[in-house]
Structures are given as C-alpha cells and as structure tokens.
Length: 247
Image 1 (cartoon, rainbow, N blue to C red):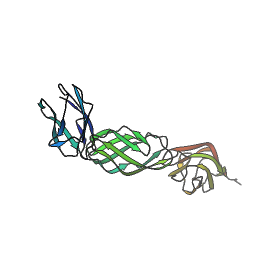
Image 2 (image 1 turned 90 degrees about the horizontal axis):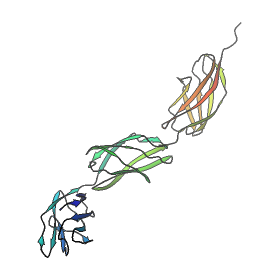
Image 3 (image 1 turned 90 degrees about the vertical axis):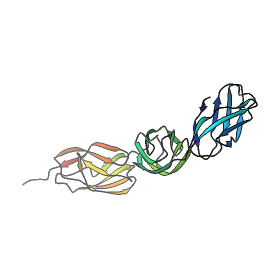
Image 4 (image 1 turned 180 degrees about the vertical axis):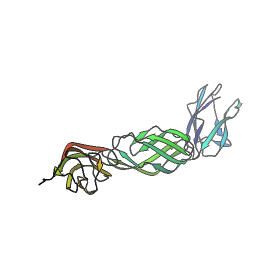
C-alpha cells in the first residue's frame, strides 16, 4: 500500500494519497498515533489524507469497518534553514550559478528569487546550487521550498549590464593622465575601467557617469571598456592616444 508523497512538513498539512485495496468505508487514517486532519476522495483503491504535525518517521495506517491496514512509512521533515548564498548579486539576464548553504536542503524542489522561481540541484543536505532566473534590477528575497516547508531571509541583488555611450575628451597623450568622463548606465557597481585592456583609476560619479584617468598607451585609437557586477560594455576605438610634438 504505497503513499505519495512519503514525506512532508513537521508542521503538518501535507496532502498524501494512499493507494491499496478494499479502502471503501475508510473511517480513519493515522500518522503514527495521530489522526489525519482530513480524509477525502475515498474509493476502493485510493484515499487522500492531510498529515497532522509530527516528527521523525511514523507508520501510516488506514482503518475501515474490516480492520486496520499494515503501516507504511511517512517521514516528517523540518523546514529548511539557510545560512548564506554566494554570489549575492548577478545580471538581470539571470544565469548566475548561486550556491546556498544551510540545513534541511536535501528535499529542496524550488528556489524563489522574488516572484521568479528556479529548480535547484541538491548537492547535500547542507548545500544546493541554482541558476538565478532573470529579474528586474534591485534586491529580492530568496526562499527555498522543501518537503519541510519554505524558508527565506536571504537576499539577492540583480544588477543591470552597463551601457557605454560616450567619452569626453576623446583623445589624450600617450603618457596617460588625461581625465575623461564616461557616460552610460549601470555604473553604480563599476569595478573596472580599461583602455586597450589597461586598467585606469576611476571614480563613480553616478549611475550614468564615471570619471577616469587614462593609463599610458601606444599612439592610436583604443577600445574603452567599463565592467560592473553584471557584465561589461565596450566603446570600440573610442579614445585616441596622441604623441606630443617634438623639436
């Protein structure tokens, strides 16, 4: 006589379906010594019952006018507890692989990032990984659903990929040190600015503006790249290194 699912929250409330024979006239379903909170959909071969609260492994029995069945195992599972997730930020496009650590994660079936959910890969009872779904820029709560219930308390920040629309001035000395202003979007979490692959010291002025001092470079046009926590934006041949006059 199988039961599905065979595990549920220690707080009760799990609807289970018990299949077997001669179940017509079921008068009681017990989880261990405790009665199910409701019994419905009784037929000769199937009964639906809602588990009461409990702990550990218990035997589930069905009672009819003809007697009581043999017990079948049901396992109570505590709600998950999350300790940390890493990384705690990623692109609004989603796809970042997130690692969550905690306890009671072995039966995880869903991880929600705000209103959007993803199916996790369970590594162990204390760890799972999940690919973040796409989301709007900003912070959202992260919740994990297991057979034991749902738990939240951690947050994840979506960061928009940067855009880079202009640079001023557009040329400067090969010796470097030209102060330029980059204009675009998504600059708040900027972590690198490069000229021809060479990093430049920079200051974030706003989400749409960054000030940078050019590093030294070879004469000619070079690409300028701004990188934030989500990705990178490139202006091709946007800055031209020039050689000073000689006498």
